[in-house]
Length: 88
Image 1: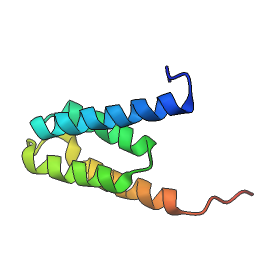
Image 2: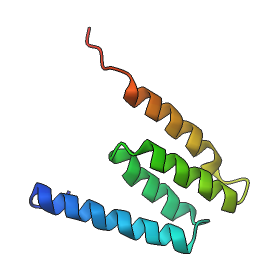
Image 3: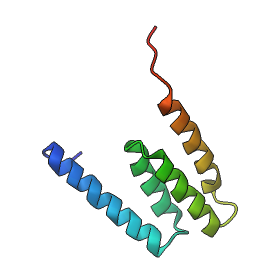
């Protein structure tokens, strides 16, 4: 969003991905870090990575957190993204 060129934007995304991986490694039970990281992954169409993060987080998280439904939602998003776009 604040990047001046495509190269700068790609670098910012790479750095954000690295920062989120570090946050997840340090605190896999952090709902905030997980949701924000999954949001980044969704924008990159990296659904499998998001599913893995959500499922791993679910092993560490409180059983009442909303994260338990996120893996299922990501699987649906992955299927929808794989469907060919039709125009009528």
